Amino acid sequence: MATRHDWTKEEILAIYDKPLMELMYEAATVHRQHHDPNKVQVSTLLSIKTGGCPEDCGYCPQAARYHTDIEENDLMSVPQVKAQALRAKASGSSRVCMGSAWRNVKDGEEFDQVLEMVRTINKLDMEVCCTLGMVTENQAKRLAEAGLYAYNHNLDSSEEYYEKVISTRGYQDRLDTLDNVRKSNVTVCSGGIIGMGEKKEDRAGMLVALSTLTPQPESVPINALVPVEGTPMEDQELVSIWEMLRMIATTRIVMPETQVRLSAGRTNMSQEGQAMCFFAGANSIFAGDKLLTTPNPDVNEDMELFKELGLKPQQPFEQHEQPKTVEAEDAQVKPLGEKPKWSRPKHTIEKNLEAKEKAKEAKKAKA
Ligand code: SF4
Image (cartoon, rainbow, N blue to C red; front, side):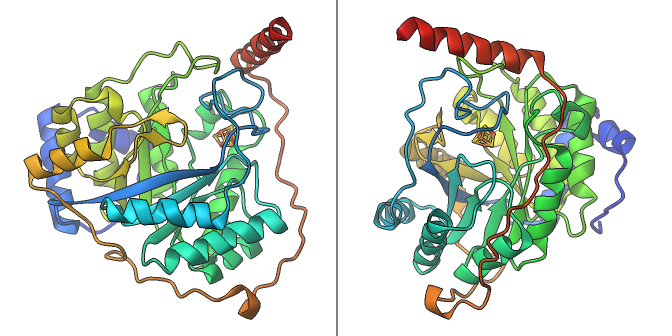
C-alpha cells in the first residue's frame, strides 16, 4: 500500500476502533511490507540539561513552576556526553537522543557546545538526535552541518487538546519548528503522549496532523504518560496496554514507513505487552534506566527480552545515510543571532495554575 498523506480523522478513528485482533493483524501486515519485523532500534535518551524549564507542559516534571523531585543540571560538557554515548554504544544503542529543557534554541555558547556534542557523537558512527525546543531554519541548518541525523519535536496531542496541556506556546510553533527542520537535511522525529486525559478523537487528530505532513516524519515516538507528583497530571490514570496497542497499530498503518518508537511508560507494561507492541509495528525502544527524568526498564532486561523474542538491534544508518560532519572552523552556515518571536498564547489552564500555586506554597513552607 502506498503511503497516504490525506488521512481524515474519521478514517483513522475507524482503524483505531477495529476489533483488536483485526487491527493487530493489519498493522503487522503493513509492518512486514516496510520493515524487518525482527529488528528493533535501541536508542539512548540523554538529558544534557535537566530541569528549570520556563514552559508549562502539564505532564513535565522539568517545568520550573511545578514542585517535583527533579535534580536540576546545567548543560553537560562534551567529554561527559561522549563518555555516555560510548557506554550506550557498547550496550547496543545505535542512536543517542540529547534532550535539553529549553523553550527554544538560542544562538551562543551553549548552542555551540551542543553542536560540538553532535559532531562528537556522529564521529562515533551513531545516529544523533536532539530535542532542544523550538528551532529556526538557520539553527536547524547549523545542526545539519554538524552531523545531526534527527530532530525531535513532539506535537504531543491534537491541536484542540494541546491547548489544555500547554499555555506557553501554540501548536503552530510546533508545526513551524518541524517545517524548519524539514528545510535542512535532518530527519524529523515527532509524536505524542497518550493518557493525558485526551479522547481517542484527539489521538486520531494528532495522527492526522503527523500523517498529512509531506513527507511524513521518519520517526514517531508514542509515549504513555508517566504521572509525576507535583505536575498538573499527577493523578492521571495509567494507560492500559490495550490503548497502547491500538495507538501503536494505528500509527503503523497510517505511517507505514516511519520508525514507530515505543517510548515512555514501558515500566508499566509487561514483557508480553511490549512483545505485542513490537508485533503491532513498534520498531524502536529507548534504553537506560531513565527516560530524561522518568523510570525505564534496565538495559539487561531489554536484552533478555530481545533474546527471548529473537529480536536483533537495528544497526545505525539503516534507514538513511550518515550525515557528514563539518568542523566548526569550516562551517558555512553562520549564526544569525536571531531573536525569533515564538508565540505565547493567552489562554489559561486551570490545572496548571493550581499546580503552580501548590508549588509556591510548598516552597514557602520549606523556607
Ligand atoms: S516538555 Fe520540554 S518544553 Fe515542556 S516543560 Fe518539559 S522540558 Fe520544558
